[in-house]
Image 1 (cartoon, rainbow, N blue to C red):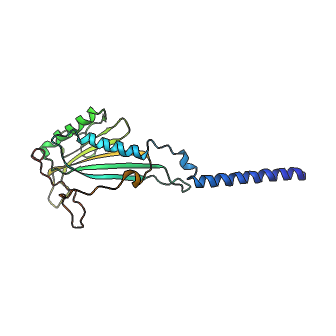
Image 2: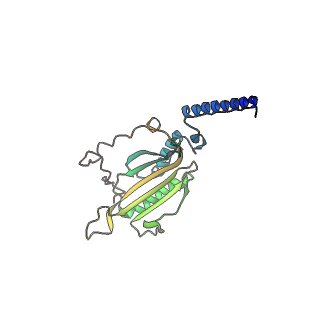
Image 3: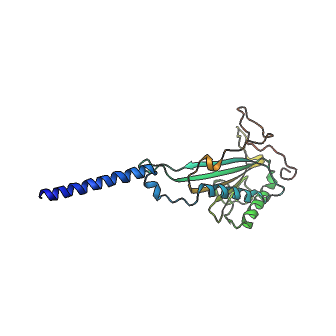
Length: 227
């Protein structure tokens, strides 16, 4: 190979190196190249609003209305890409815990009200399940039912009448049923507090634990639902 050819090869190699360095600098400054292949199914703002709408769509059909404690938005960012770059994906979850001590005899009625509200809004509703995933036949102390909205929110209503403070010699049903409605969306574009805001303060009449945190155990006796 003559000198002219060597110089040409060296010039091409130098040009490629400069291009790669420039491309690497651009990718570093704009967040890398792997996250550019991430395709979130919705923005963080959409997830926030759709989850809120879904939770209201679950409990707004319950009459008489019941108070609840808002668990607010729980945002979990997916693991980083293999090269250490941050993923654009996240899973967003929010739950409402009903404050009413639901009477066991009202369990199926309450679940039917939630299910009817889902169907009225066009959600795809799944069958009810008891503990360990077996079909619910009305005799179990625990039942959960789920639905999926047309805009991609997965929502569950869980009514748990089992004892949560089992002691030696104690078993069976609790004196009341705990109700939790939970809405989740996966593969959401990651967003922080600027999107979801801060959790609201618990109502003043919510009992407090020894450490000052809200006691989420149902404590409200409702003239209808608790009888």
